[in-house]
Amino acid sequence: MSLRSMLAYFVLLCVDMTPYQKDTTLKSSPVCKTFVSTSVRKYSKKTAAPERAYDSDDDSDSDDERDRTPRRQRKERGNSEFWRRKMRTLHGVMDVNKDGVISYDDFMLLTEKFASLGHLDAKAKNEFRDIMRTTWEQQWGEITPYNLVTVEQYLTEMHHVVNDKDLKKKVHRFLPYLYKAVDKDRSGSISLNEFKLFFRCLGLTEENAAVSFAVIDKNGDGQITLDEFVKLGKDFFVSEKETHVSRMFWGPLVDH
Image (cartoon, rainbow, N blue to C red; front, side, top):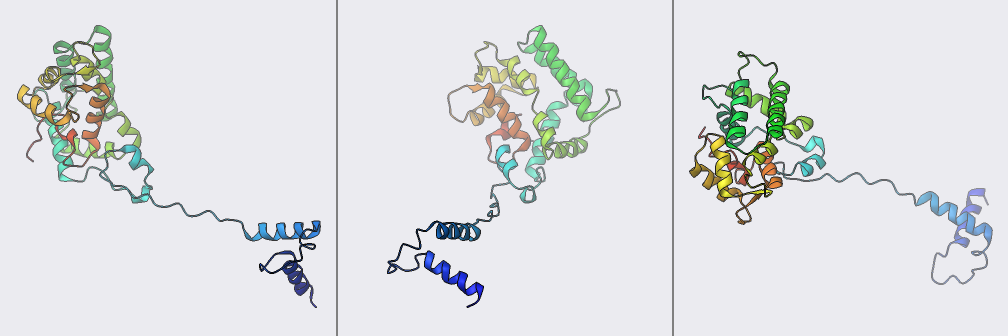
């Protein structure tokens, strides 16, 4: 009998192969236990199962959900005509002097509107100005009268922003200052009247504000908290769902 055959026979004696095997003497021997344990360990090692692909809706408003999606499965944001409409709308809002382009002067005019019509104290006003200045420099470059951002330039830059993980985190950082400016009673939530002030600072009508507020106040409690406000503002930039309430955050969308 070959050595391999002897080993196979020994294993058969050690392992209870059928329910009729009665002899347990050999099975209980230390040598047999060691041999069987080693043999079973050798052939029972589990190989790591491949990670299951995470199926998600690429139009999802949840950045956390999208970030868990394998990179190869993600679609670029900002390719739908609906998203482009939203960005053209925001370009029009940021173009405070309505000359067709956004300039640093527009950023400062918007800042001053919120500072004067709103309810920011001196410290908050200075912080807001610094944030807007930094945002301009990081996103659009030097501060000169000749650095003008057209609609198409704005669309191209915002497309880049919403597809860059780090830049996307900064796109809404000025929103808390807008909120503080219109939270007149410092209650931590804004009412319809305070939301009308927000739209007035943006150069929009109170009628627009009432329509938008009715859409974005999802739970119907007549209040929007800071967290809700910032999330809505952020979702406006990143969501491509035409039914998402954030579409009304900056007022009615332009037609084209």
